[in-house]
Amino acid sequence: MEFQLPYHKGTLPLHVPDANLSHVLTNRAEEFKSDRSEADIVRDALAAPIGTPKLRELATGKNKIMVITSDHTRSMPSGITMPILLEEIRAGAPDAEITIMIATGLHRAMTHQEQVERFGAELVEKERIVVHNAFAADEMRYVCKLPSGADLSINYRALESDLIVSEGFIEPHFFAGFSGGRKSILPGIASQETVNENHSAKAIASPYAATGVLKGNPIHEDMDYAARKVGLAFILNVAMDAEKHIVAAFAGDCVEAHAKGCAFVSDMCGVDKVQSDIVITTNSGYPLDQNLYQTPKGVSTAAACAAEGAVLILGASLCDGIGGTNFEKLMRLGSAQKIKETVEAIPPKESIPEQWCAQTYAKIMLQYTVIIVTQHMDLRELESMGFLAFASFDEALEKAFELKGRDASVTVIPDGVSVIVRS
Image 1 (cartoon, rainbow, N blue to C red):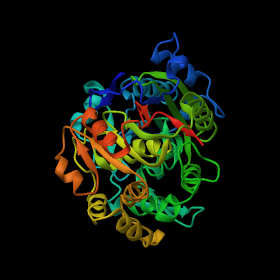
Image 2 (cartoon, rainbow, N blue to C red):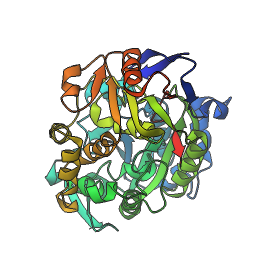
Image 3 (spheres, rainbow, N blue to C red):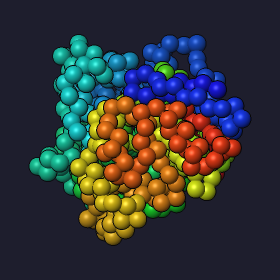
Image 4 (cartoon, helix red, strand yellow):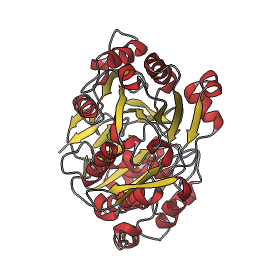
């Protein structure tokens, strides 16, 4: 059977012998498609918000309004959503000063060109856009203690706003349960110290810090608390199909609307657990596959379907390299066991950026062989970190058969970020 798997801004082919192919796991997004346009789906959600008055009513009388949005590492369709959001806000507060803040978390800054590609040249030219910098200590302000005991500090501009609104999209997340909603505040516009402690080794090690899990998830609970404390008054979150088209939208209260969206995505993305000797997946293509730091998302999904000692194959362009100085240092420690021991020895308040992705990789690499498929990065560099690496899926699969035998069972998960494996 031939597959065309997401890779960078296109696809790469994969051929699996019929006798070996055990399962193909995809979400059910096609079943949820609507006859309405994407813009109409968004407008309908704003017209009937969940748990709050309409956004235009919340905006009435407000002078300084902040709209938080996702950065270049997310596929947020802001070219559609942002103009509609701004239109709705200005219907209630035509003269308000509106700041669009790009929630980078600990990622690099979003470039001007990336902003133009995301929002369109006209909006970038007309609107006031600020890129959050978690490492600028003078821009952070202390808010409170979080349930975990971590200190919450965020960008002062949000605290000086009369109304905080955010847009985002909901998809499965490998340790926060789901993206979207409260993540606009933490990690979106929080200080590096706050983000680091939220993603501590202790928190990541929790059995509830897992894909599709919110109840009991310590990372989610801190994020949820932070959004409430800061006063995130209204969210617009969307769900998307594999082609990044909006299939549903959820607007209103940052907890209630997000919960409705998560329930929708859980229904759309849930698949029954299977186990195979070889599991092949991707990190959803661009932008999520642009660096190694992002790829634990896809690998974690593959691991959920892996038989003992399985081979996991992940396709990712890695066009932006490894992604993160601390992550790279940890991944170069020499062995998965060394990475695990190093990260687990770091106290929560001394957590360093990016340790969580190295911790996730170490856990997986101690159990399984991981093969990376990329045509954008030096394969030898990946091999120096303990991976096997090839330029094509077919080469990687051939190696997997050498390791697991010609009769090995194969599961293909075309988009490892878009499914939730039910345990």
